[in-house]
Image: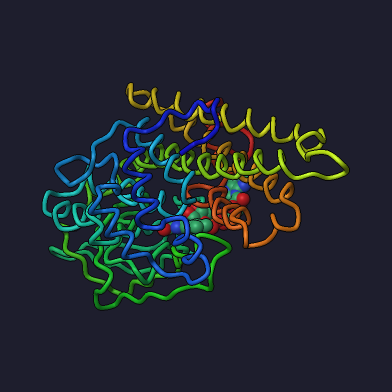
Length: 385
Ligand SMILES: Cc1cc2nc3c(=O)[nH]c(=O)nc-3n(C[C@H](O)[C@H](O)[C@H](O)COP(=O)(O)OP(=O)(O)OC[C@H]3O[C@@H](n4cnc5c(N)ncnc54)[C@H](O)[C@@H]3O)c2cc1C
């Protein structure tokens, strides 16, 4: 799937199955359609679940593949290379719900996590609020205990699948300084959802706002101990930032390969574009950055598998992978000329889709803040880290 002969990205163990899914489910052209007519791709979600291509890392007892992290990353890279961010991110949905898989009760996992891995149920993740995004410590949505229930009061914003999700993992304050996670079905009395205007890219996510007005949630829907949600979320964030990096690098690599081929045949001023240094040199640099960032991601994944804390490396990886992919795709737009700017070619859509990576799952600046916190653990670093 990755045509470049010198690529350091190993073929994932599912490369044949991924190639079959991409071609039989027409994933590349479905991604174009979903950009033009945004909707949650239920049919593909179910089909990927049936092929066990959701939850590549999820335990086999929940219907997942239980693959090691580096293999998951190589497979996601291949899927993103062949069809863009859309279906690779769909495949990652169970990863975004690891808190439920690892700390939810058996009943919650059977009722919500397994159907998610099987592509039968969609779960959202509600952290961001109108007054709390990067600074998640500023959450205001409150869950107040009342007997065997919690009452949820507040507003979540920027949420993917706001109107489409069957249930969501909701992060709520349960004390002045404590935050807890709850599994909340999204059709409860007092819960109101509204979609926002379409996004720049990844429009199929149909983000929006969810308002909770006295929503009653059974106490058994709490995930993990009260007040410890952010500790549980930390491990999930580290993994997902590394796996998202693999996706962004896969998308960047596809634009890179297509551009290398194009500039070899297109002529300007009597010779191929590739022989103009202003074209060839930036592509050589993109090649170095794509490979180097992949190797960095792989090393961090290896350390994580060995039990090390790589939260800072994961943050840096996401920052670098997003930057590298965006720059590479921008070169693809530029060197394909007028056609590169057109939606007839995939580069402009890929750029719009990858652009979210510099904001979602922690903005790029905040990724540096996390890394600076490792460099200067005891005192304020740049930007107050
Ligand atoms: C495609 C997409 C999908 C998303 N899906 C979800 C979802 O499903 N659930 C959910 O809860 N949220 C979701 N989000 C929201 C996302 O997590 C937040 O947008 C993000 O955390 C930033 O929060 P904010 O928008 O409030 O920006 P703010 O916190 O207001 O920050 C605005 C900007 O200020 C800068 N900045 C912030 N802090 C610092 C700092 N310390 N130093 C330097 N610069 C800084 C950054 O450039 C940042 O982008 C999604 C976002 C996108 C784009």
